[in-house]
Image 1 (cartoon, rainbow, N blue to C red):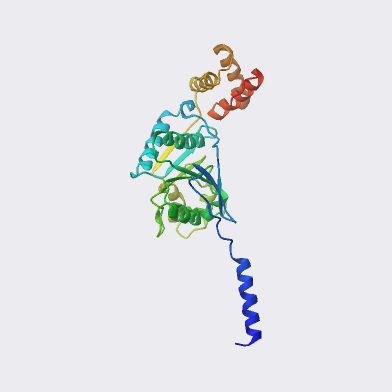
Image 2 (cartoon, one colour):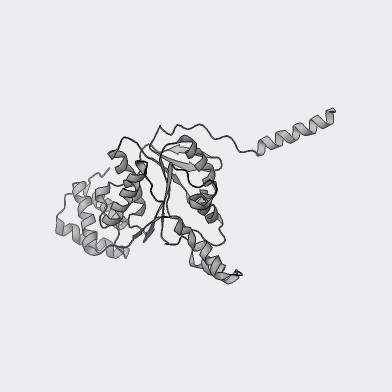
Length: 284
């Protein structure tokens, strides 16, 4: 092989090395019970302290709480369990319940579950993340908050294959929990566009809607009534020892909900933060 050929091959090899993604940095998944996945470059960021609410403070969603806890408990014990889709109104405790269930199950047993959050925009990197989690072996809740798809987004196909239909499928040590404001994860415009342009509209729409069928457990969340809203407020006030009478608490909480135009767990928490600040009471 002459010198010119060697020089060309050397330049090609150097260019390919620059294009190749950097190797994933070694990460100790025993270093924390929660991580956030970042793609491009791929890495897992430890979360020393998860931002969460104690599970006993989540009022008005007792049925959903028990179903998710039961499913998570079976998974932690090595028994069959389902991927879960928590869908419904904003601010009703969907993501709070996932984080609270993870903490509760870890407090119950010796086998600590890992919680890994993947952002919606990183869904296309999901197969790479699953290969890492599969190789580590630790039982893991893979969590995506506010999952939905818009326009011509094709990432849902990757998720669909990973959840159930791909040749590798979901690793046995990983379960997928997602929250969404939509039961079927897809915008109405996205479904209608598929219906209008497809050769067989029925089959095209079924292809998209069937994504949610990959979740064996569906849990619906809805805005709470006034009594439940007051119960949530009272639970927070008692937990953080806020010096205020029940009548005054209800009056101020109701005024706060009216200004927000809704009653929900999120609205209740925002009110409690405001109230505790005005009362000079820390709630950390």
